[in-house]
Amino acid sequence: MSKAEIIVQRIASLRQWMTERHLDAYIFPSTDPHSGEYVPDHWKAREWISGFNGSAGTIVVTLNRAALWTDSRYWLAAEEQTQGTSIEVVRCGRNQVTAEDVAAWLAQAQGEPAEGVMTLGCNAWTMPSDYAEDLAAALSRRGWQLKGSIHFKAQLNGAAMDVEINNDDPESALWTERPPLPNSLIEIQPLEYAGVPAADKLNAIRSSLADADSILITQLDEIAWTLNLRGQDVHCTPVFVSYLVVQPTDAVLYVNASQLTPEVEAYLQELKVMVRPYEDIARDLYSGAIDDSLGLQYDPSVTNMALRMAARQDGDSRFFYEYPSPVPSLRAVKNEAEIAGYRRAMLRDGVAMVKFLRWLKPAVEQGGVTEVGVDQKLTALRAEQDGFRDISFDTIAGYGPHAAVVHYEATPETDIPLEPKGLLLLDSGAQYQDGTTDITRTIALGPLTEQERRDYTLVLKGHIRLATAVFPEGTSGTQLDVLARYAMWQDHKNFGHGTGHGVGSYLSVHEGPHQFRMNWMPAPLKAGMTITIEPGIYIAGSHGARTENTMLIVEDGDRPTNEYGRWLRLEPLTLCPIDTTPIVRELMAADEIEYLNKYHARVREVLLPLLADEEDRAWLIQATKSF
Image (cartoon, rainbow, N blue to C red; front, side, top):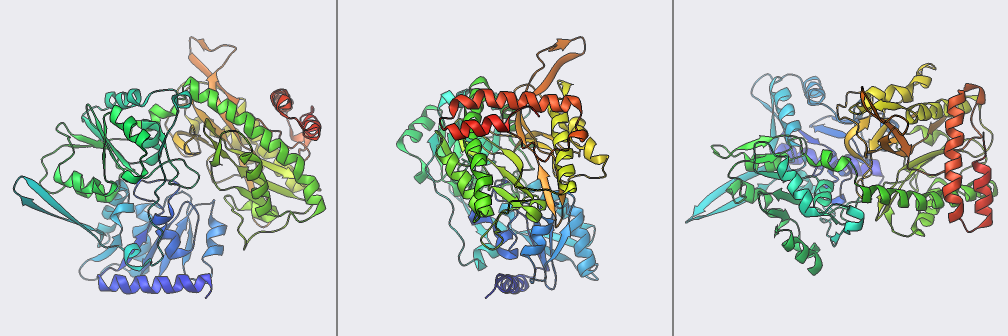
């Protein structure tokens, strides 16, 4: 049975399940109960029902139609992966479909209800509560309602309350080979890498609460950062499945106890962090077992609908406050130990990249190198470096037309051989215990077309123009984003993804709240933040180009302060040559060439002493010579 036939069969089973429960439609977002970017296999229900494996997308299934929304990174991939399934791919300009999009499509697909109410079902555990509210309101205006698949029933037994929680979702009922919950051992991130004790972080979180005296933290990377703990429950991200409630003098960690070593148990006890079973969080919220006498704060954008239903039960006299989590802002500015860790990690990553790039072109000329082989070779070279723990995301190795698929991931079905011509777009990164890396290089494997060279140069110009920016503290990434796009805009080209994102310290490779992005992102840029610069141009069916470095925001050394405030600039953390062979020199400004030459001189200066192999050294000297 083909993959498409399997998906068709699953959708048919879902429709039967929906009919039995009087549901007119069902929605599958991309999220898990923790609103994570990278979702454990146990919660990949959208991929299970649609076959689409991109990180962003939403599918809605009615009794006779199905639609999948995804953003520009995945338009081509989604259309390929859903071919033959009758799923309609809706090209969305954002990485999350809006509630209005869903409601409008349902109204168009099903028509306005003539009588009664039509019902859209969802798994309350994987639906963020603020999105659920928006969706319910948008549906209500069109005669629909949203029904979450969780039900509570409480019964008082003397002084105790027994709470029964009933879940009724298609994943549990129909997904016969559903992977189990992850269960990796949790480890302590040493203070020499974390920089700040967990006790100090807990107190900083407490001090940030305005109205409540307790806070529910649901995002896994926020919990790992707060407690200086790491795990391996999520692909490419060193976190563990859990919830954390921070109270005035102690905290409660909801986690599978089998994941705790004796060392971690003792560590948590010293921090006054109690441990409760992971599955008890909703029961404790519903019954009031969590100490929140002055109120409980939670972030509705990342707290799932089920927990909100449990906390804010009808007739509840307790106080609940909805505010953005304070953790991203506390975490965004890196401390000295974290910055030192990034610098060490980037050195080792640079060595691996040099070894890889020196190997690449001769290997391609000999033949037999494929996209998957590129991924395997680079990962193996990184694994040789001290402190390597994992890759930081699935490697994007797109050759030729595949490079135009923004987040392309080679599979055995799509893998193609590399030839000594055209461009290879290679976006990759690693998790080292002292730092996380993220780098993109586009490499000329041989002769190029004039269009390939021009697009490559426009991307490089955008990267350099933003990399050389000097700006006042408090500037947002949106205010600077145009610098990376200006040159390509003059050629009537653009890209649909963000230009840059924060990078975690042995945590998620994508961190907020700050970004470089066209749409308004108000988070101010501050010294000590990490952020990437990664503009790109993608020509469907032909080629793609992207150049990315991870940067550190620092004070501008020439004139850090004056009557206008504090001035900042961007310092490259990534250390790896940028291919100069595709550059159209006459398109480059003099200061752009100067920046490139200075960057290469720095790369050569710091990496050359770390290379023992004479061929690696010779290659680096040649790759970083003045342009």
